[in-house]
Every structure is written in structure tokens, then in C-alpha cells.
Image (cartoon, rainbow, N blue to C red; front, side, top):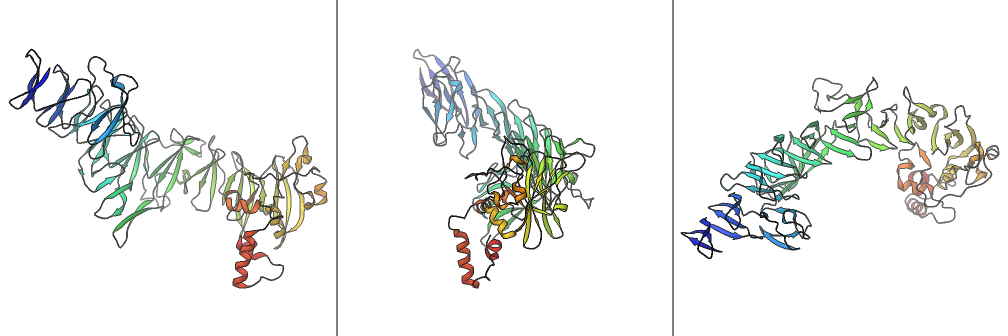
Amino acid sequence: MDAYSKNGKSGFVTVVGFISVPFIYDEITERKGGNFNVRIDTSWGVIDINGRELMPVKYAQPIPLYITQPEDVLLEEDDFIEYDNRISRIITNGSLLNHFQYINPNYDEVIIYDSDGRMITNKKGLTILEDGRSGFLGCVDLNGKEVLPTVFEHLMFSENEKILYFGLGGCHEEKYCSFFSNIEYANWGCIGINGNIMIEARYDCFKYIDGYILGGRDGSMLGKGFYGQNYYESEYGGVYDMYDVEGNLLIGGFREFKLLKSQNLYLFKFGGYWVEDEDDYHCHSYYFEKGNSRWLAVDKDFNSIKLEDNGKRKSFYHHIGNMNEFDDTNYWNIPLKYFSIDEPYIENDVMICGCLDDFEQYAVRISDGLSSFVYDRIEMIDDNIFFFTMFDHNVDFVGIASLSKDEDIILIDPENEETYILTYPKDGFVFGVSKIDESNCKVVLYNIKEVGFNPIIAISKVNEHDLFEMIKQGLLQIFIIDSKVGLQRISVIKRDIFEDSFQSLINITESVQKKDSTELYYWYSQEKELSNTEEQDEFDYQNYENETDYRRDNWDAMTDGMYGDMPDGFDGDYSFLGH
């Protein structure tokens, strides 16, 4: 069978003169597997060798995928096709043709792009095609079956293979490009491959994050670059509404969303705003202004982590957050007690939240919603017991408490004990340091696991500088000997720094400090607690007894050269300023 032309039209004629394909086509090109691209005027379609129409002649470009014939057709490994100046490789491994994948060898992605850089074939082989007459877009599957009719002004694949974005209005701008599309001012919605509209076209953009659809509204795109030149817009300045993959609205009005997968918690930032800058050279940039922003944490059912006054969790399902202009005490239509002013973080299955005052925190246990009082600072020891800092008489003190239904149980009370350094509990035993006077302090042993335990003086008086040297050498660490009972379970590195009366109570065996240990030993009332500062960890736990302290030498050399030597016996320039 050969192709012939008649009156400017092309068709097929058999060797015996039978016209198998009528002379109605302006162009016929062969496709892999025996099928043919055909064009009438400006519209393309696909036929088989017998003239049977596999895809209607209605599309604006040649079809960039192979349509299977009634019988199964096999392709060879690494067959190539060329479409729109892009080479794609077909991987079959001997499988049927309608199970092939397109692979871009440069990026190893299963996609095909059009001339505008838009993905038109996804991993499932669905392809976006344009109607040759109307210019509207639709979608076909691997067999050429129309999945979505060509009725959409704009159509794009999402990261979910069963969902597409469709758009209305807007225009293509040559110099416009955003993280979402290169079409400006369009309204976008979501449609499933079954043809059901999931989300109406009322959003400026979409993001697909962790299995959820985020629709952006009430804002504009933000980007960096020179005005009037190529300008990539990488962020959206409005708010988002969240939908599931079925198109159900879950929650809305937020700026940012994060999923904490290990705890199955959702974090939403409400409020704040984006600010765009322009310098003298018309170069644009942007930054986020925290303003009145707040974080809301909910579980997978969109219930609050913190409990209501009635002991139940508050539901935020379908809640749309917005500003409340008529309430001077709360700008939001969400009670403030459910907000964290800073992004919450998780410690030992407990969420640490920032209070209305930037310098205050409270803890909420995720499992039961039990929350602590508000303190200056909190760090969880386990899912129940925590360190806390409180400011009293212009001094920071630290204590230990545990979560309880009615009120926190104070295990080491800083108001009474005036402790400003605590060691991490070892089987309940804790060393606490408190001031005696401006220069001296004492070390006391506490047991937070034993009710009615009377604190024991471990060191009755020690110069504060000498104490810091002990801490740097790790000498206040507590070690536990499991085979012993009571105070005989306690072992220390150097017994003779403690009172004789205390030495008589604890085990006679001295322990050896672990090298390269990442274990935390102390919790301080200072602004930079050792538990959260790697540089301080290294400094305070390093033993300089038998090696040169280069940091101290460098500091002394610098300050002596600037100010001269400090008075004899005073080492405060390094211990306080240099440190």
C-alpha cells in the first residue's frame, strides 16, 4: 500500500488500486507501529492503515504519543521519538506498547514538554492536547481516548496524577514566569481525570504539599529580579485554603503549612505579611514581616492539641481564619490560647509553644492535650517532666516540674531553692547550684522521683569560678550503678570535691567521663543554655587540665594588648566577657 496525492489531498491506495484511505488529508506522516498522523487544514489526528480514526482530527499539533492498534504491538528497548525538539526515550523491557514510559535522558523524568516548557504528558501517559479550531485544551489517555474534552482555556498537570489544574482568563506574558505557571491573572481550579470539578476556578495559584491541595487567594506573586526583565516569581503573597484530594475544604486563611509526619501534626501560620523592596537599580526582592502572625497546631482530624476548658479538643475543621476588626483584645477569629506566637517545636512527644510574650513558653503533651503553666523558658526531660526558667528579683532561676491535670507539680522549686544550674536527672537524682553570696555558691542533691526526699548538701561552699571549672571538666555529672540501692547507686568522677559527709553516703567507686559523648549534663539559667548551644557544649565539657587552652590564650593576648593586664587574681575578663 502506498500514499498518493490527488488534488492536493493525500490518501492510501493498495497495489490493486483500491482506495483504502480517502484523499481528504492535507498531510500524512507515519508513526511507530503502523499508525499515521493526519492533518486536515490546521487540525491533526491519528488513523490506522485501514483509515480507521484512532484519534479525531481536531488537535492543533501532531499527537506526541503512540496509540496502540487492536493487536498488541511491541517496541524495542531504547526506541526514540522526537517531539518539539526534545528527545525522549521509550522504555518497554518487552512490555506492551500501552505500558511504555517516556524518559527524558537529561533529567531522567517521565515527562514531555511543549514549546512553552509546560508538561503535556504525565507519568500515567495522559496527554494535554489543544483543539485546532477553538484553541481550547483537553486530555487523552494512552489509547487516544478523550479523558477530558477540549473545553478548557488553560490546563496543567498537578503533582497528583489524578488531578489537573484548569484556568480561566489571564494571558501569556513573555517575561512572566512564576512557581505555578507562565499565565498571568488567570483564575484556577482543580478537576479530576474523571471530569468532576473538585475546586471551582477562583484561586490565583495552587501548591501540592504532602498530599494536600493549597489554593492561593487574596494576594499576588512575589519574585526577585530587575523590573522589565525576566522576573521569576517564587512566592505568593496571599493566603491559602487547604483541600484534600477529593476536593473537600479542610481549613483556610493561612500563610504557611507544615506537616510534622512523625507526630502526625499540622502547623498553620496565620497573619503576617510580605514586604517587597526595590533598590536604586530597580531590583526587586521581598521578605516576610512577622507582624501579628500566629501558629495553630492541630491533629490529623483538625482538632486542637491544647484542650478547651471543658477538657475536650476544639475542632478547626472547615475553619477559615481571618482578622476580627471589632475585638481590640484579639485580632483573630480564633481564641488566642490555641495560638503559638512562634513556630511550635516538639520535644519528647510534647509541643513547646510561644506565648503572647515572645519570651514566654508553655508545653502541651500531644497524647492527652495536658498543658503546663507559662514560664520564661521550657525544656522537656521526658514526656512528663521538664526544666523551666522563671525570672524573679531580676535574676533567672531554674526548676523542674511535671505536667498534671490541675496544676504543674513543682519538683525543684526555684523560688525556695534559688537554683540557677541543674544537672540532668539520673534515676531521679539531680545536682542543683544556688548562690550563697556574690562570689560563692553551694551544690545540693535532689531526688525528684522520691516524695519527701530531703535535699542533701553535696558542696557547702565553693567559689563560683572554681565551680565553673568543675563544670567544664564534667565533675558534677551523676553516674548510676544499677547493682546498688539508695544513694549507694550514685557515683561521681572525683569524690574529693564533695563534702566528707556526702562522700560517705554515695558509692566509693569513681566513674570515668565518657569521651565524645553527646549526652547533655547541665541546664542553665543563662540566656544561652548549654543544652542548646553546641559551641558552649564543647567549651564547657572540655577538660583543659592537660592541654593548652588556645581560646583563653587568644583572648588574653587580645585584651592585654588593648587594655593591659587585668588585676592579679581576676580572671573575669575571659570567664564572663570572653566566654
